[in-house]
Length: 334
Image 1 (tube, rainbow, N blue to C red):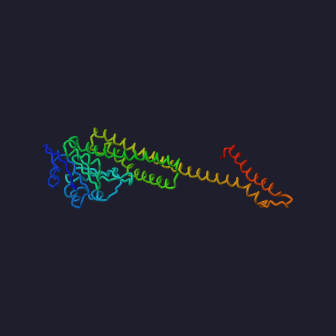
Image 2: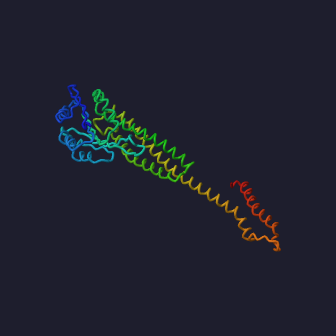
Image 3: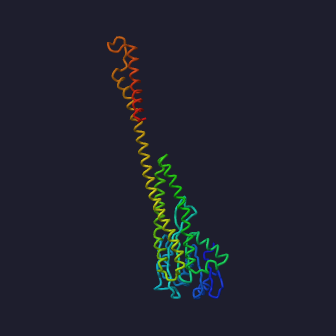
């Protein structure tokens, strides 16, 4: 697998996909050049390019080597790159759509952004990167001619849109859980509810800070992002805010489903206790009669008159429970 992918448009109009240091240095020193360098699953030699060719700050390079960085944006305008041009270091998280139903996780995307270049670094495949690379391989000018700020917008736009299948999945999954909690509160359902709550918490933890990153891009704090690009970035921010709001809504739904589940369990338990209580009340007259008389119906007894007494006691034993059942039914306890 090719780890380095470059699309370079030099100031004289030439387009190149060379990834050697000489080509990158030439593009970096050309004030009119625009290029995109993508580094997938970087090795130590490829990390060295960030220092040897671009001269990025060691702390920024170190952050790219540490996985699971919090989404953020940092300015290095006061230091600059090898050409003393200011740049920004960004960390964004994109959804992993390959197995999100079994294991919801996000992929980290590190970026170095300047007026003339965009460098993307990631350990796992990122769909927005793959999509734009496919377009650039057909014609690099398509993704470079509108400027680095619009290329950045395209990456972020596709990345945020990729959260839509995950949110749709959560909506369907929570509706199924709610129906099961109402109609079939099986014991394993509480574990599924807790798993969905944890997934939503992790998703919120990775998405929510990205609002601040995009907001900074739209407020004019990044000087090389033009106003025309900020309009598009504000649209991406709106989509991201909507996604965060949906996650918050789904978290409330999970809590509601858990309450429904607990109520269903309690109602089911109350129904069992009610049934057992009714059975106990119905069986009580039989127990009292048989305990009091001992079922010793003999002809010589002055009170228990043989077979007649047995018939009378039997009628009492079964008549009282039947009468109780009628009373319970009229009171709508059954």
